[in-house]
Length: 483
Ligand code: TXE
Image 1 (cartoon, rainbow, N blue to C red):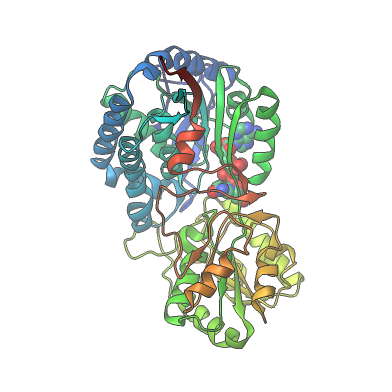
Image 2 (cartoon, helix red, strand yellow; image 1 turned 60 degrees about the horizontal axis):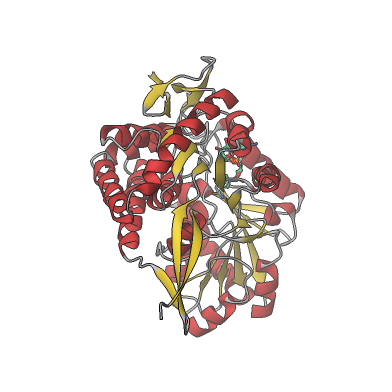
């Protein structure tokens, strides 16, 4: 069994008090690794190492840091399969998804920010008699706290721009999915990234996570996770005037107009609903369909969902693996039970007792993709984030009603619209209160674009300039022309 360690000041170490936590394989409930149960004194060591290393790191040139990012990308690319295997083992996601999305995007995050860094030029503002020079430096030491659904994908999405802008890092992955964070730490160690620039501390959110939020040397927090925890992060960090980036939950609408090409909209809606077993903040967990085509669309959707292959995460043909844990599976099942009490109808899937235990052993957190019809769009199942393989279907009779229903949740992260008339789709997109809307596609990502949401989906944006801006402080130097 793997004994994963923290990575502090270039050394792999246990928690100071030696305590550990188990890392469970959601496909069979077995312990696959242990991680340090770090506490505040472990964060103190990491923050001190980061603070010491950051001065020299920030003094390097942007070009030198760009070269480092490309070196990291090259080294991670050599471990593409190892990353995919570890991510699939840790999360229960299909190995094909871990290869195509998690491992590939983790490499791409470093490659993208290296290339994007090369495009940056110094910002100046010319006046009649003076010139303003906008210099950007790192914040100093930043805390990166990440969730269990896309572990290395989301950690690397923060590490790359943080390093590029001259910061040193104290990173804390989810205690449920620690493995690929250690592959990153091992890789940075192998390529001799200056020690202390990247530090990794494992453990429980309310313990080591909270300690990161509170540490006086940590000047910025980039957090991705649940809205409830986002509130704690904000409440702790804001009074300390730390810079904050919060990427939180979502309850995104997939809107299917009456002129949609169903050959695209049906697989598109199913993919948006059930990728990673619905455990992506961008998932389309509500489907709004024009009542004129509702029956035709819904029966095609059920057929599409029932063709999805549920299997062991390590089998290439698997399309639906497990959810992250048995505990999370019970939470998702409680929503399916709730849907029935709220007047819903299970069109396919349901709890394990409804669909019969999948033949992967009773300890596997497997749940069939579930489609629920007949619920009011204001029901709890249609407005709360379930974050599992469950989607509710609702009808609308006008575009105005589609907008009203789409905006009728406390979240505002993403959504997609399916129509043959792209002008109509684009116009409708602008009425949806979210940070991202796709028209006739889903999860099609240009990393230069702003990523993030409004309302309870978070504060701030990541991607391109938005990441560089978050992970840097500007100093404007105004120089009078000499004459
Ligand atoms: O998130 P948490 P989890 C949503 C989804 C899911 C819910 C909980 O609804 O059911 O969040 O998932 C750390 N101080 N999303 O448990 O609890 C924690 O250890 C500092 C949406 O993953 O928010 C982990 O590293 N840190 C999300 C990280 O915060 C704390 C993706 C996220 O944990 C902490 C995942 C504290 N007090 C879940 N408490 C998305 N937007 O993609 C916890 N943590």
